[in-house]
Length: 464
Image (cartoon, rainbow, N blue to C red; front, side, top):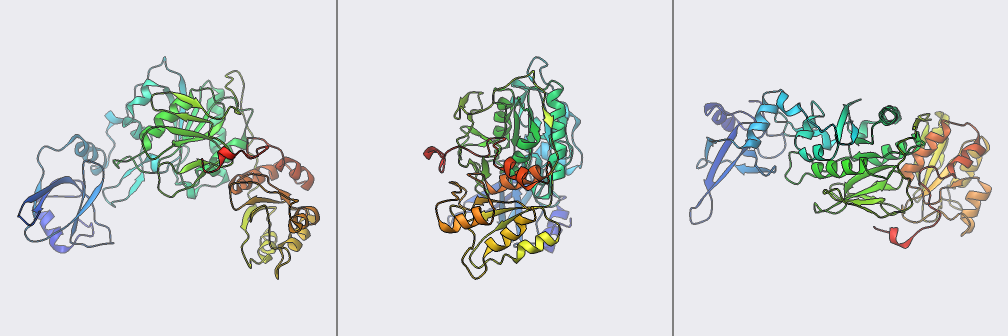
């Protein structure tokens, strides 16, 4: 079976004609009184980590359980497989996708939208050969589990330009998504939903915010913190809420994900003002230095939370302005940081830098290794340096302390206001794709194109 189980378990499974994906029942002695406990589930492969004498089952709840094997344990094939088991075995263990599951029927009277599937947890499934999750073989598979979508929208097209985890993407993928979004919106779609991995989702949302000029329809990026095979998956509700946003009246690029840990509502956050703030929580995406655009309920109810948003206008045409300079770097200052790293990047042809500065926008200035001298030297050569605060919340203030005045007045760094470091990185690459002039780059970096810089900080935006 080649699944990393011990020899005795491999022999047992073979004798009972069990294989990975088979539905089995494991019965073992339970309490000290001798009660028996029975567990039904799908037999999962054993990875090289952990005890090879432990049997891994996927329960009907979607969660896995490990049971230590002993001689008194009874293992049988389970009778009457559940619908979940049938689905999993038919679709995955046999190595094919049921045609029945990919025949989608949408009501042509519903608002038409397109879906662009790029990969990530939201478009993944359990792999019964490895025990992990992998990308769906067909993006239509996950829609089978969310029939509510058909009551809200008519998904006219499902595009799959590529299948990647978000950490494997770069600017060329952003460009491809932006061009496809523009084509779909200009062909009559009411909105576009982009499914995407969560780790670097906020980079892509920022990129689309700058690359989609004259946008007057919703572009909704959505992911999932937990894959669809898990009982606590957030994929279904996130997709449902995203569909409601896609046909709604907020004409911006944004991320729609769980707004709290329970399945109550989602938040639609502006694409340049949102960040993943937790590695695993379902409500990991939070607005930073801004209010959410809206609170979205699975029923379709939409509560506007931020009145400062662009309104829908279906007559307008969007332009995909995808020029981008990839030779941009984010550098983080820290105690004792050596500015020689800047010289190294410049020697490799880098044309711009985002400095994750401390507090109000400081870098080492009167230290043993001052950054201000190195920055000043390269600014003279036409290389822009924009600062964003490591605190994330709050904004850069270039005149409060003398060290700040040295950095911004004498060295020539560009204060980024309350822009997020990742957004600044994407914006600087986009700006330098349009100009080689330092003064023009400075002007563009200080211009608010997609809500990335707010005029003032509001108390209610902190730790929303």
